[in-house]
Amino acid sequence: MVMCSVLRVTSRLARSGLAAQCCQRALYSTENKTRFYTKKHEWVSVTDNIGTVGISNYAQEALGEVVYVQLPDVGKEVAAGDECGALESVKAAGEVYSPVSGTVTEKNTAAESKPALINKSCYEEGWLFRVQLSNKEEVTQLMDQAAYDKYLEEH
Image (cartoon, rainbow, N blue to C red; front, side):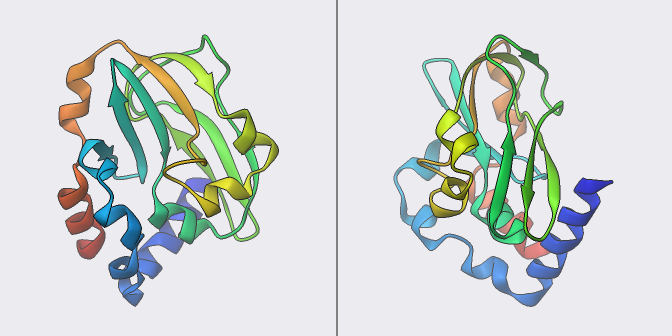
C-alpha cells in the first residue's frame, strides 16, 4: 500500500516531464554501463559476483527528502523481487525490493544513520546494501540504462 503512494508520485513526475531531467550525471557516468534497473526503480551494479543495490535518482527525487532508512541485515537471504527494506521521506514511504537473489554481505550503515546521503548521492555514497549473487543470470532480466530511460519516458 505504501509503495502505491510512491508509484503515484513517480507516475506524476513522469507525466510532468521531470523524467527527462533524471540524473544527467548518471547518463554520462562510466558506471551506468554496469548498472541495471527494476521497474520499481531499484538498481544493481555487479562486480566480482557482488551486487551493490540502491534506488535510482528518479525514485529519490519522487520520494523527496529521505529521513529514515531500514536495510536488510548482513547474512539475510533475499530473492529477486523480495521486499527487504524501507525508506521514508517527508512526502511518502516505500519498500525496498531486492533486484537480485543472494546473501546480504554488507549494508550501508552511513545511509542508515544519514538518510540524506540517498538524496545527495544515490549512485555513490547513498547505495543501500550489497549481495553475494546466487544467480548471476537474474541480472539479464533487468533493464540497462537505455531501457530504463525509455521506461521512464513511457510511464
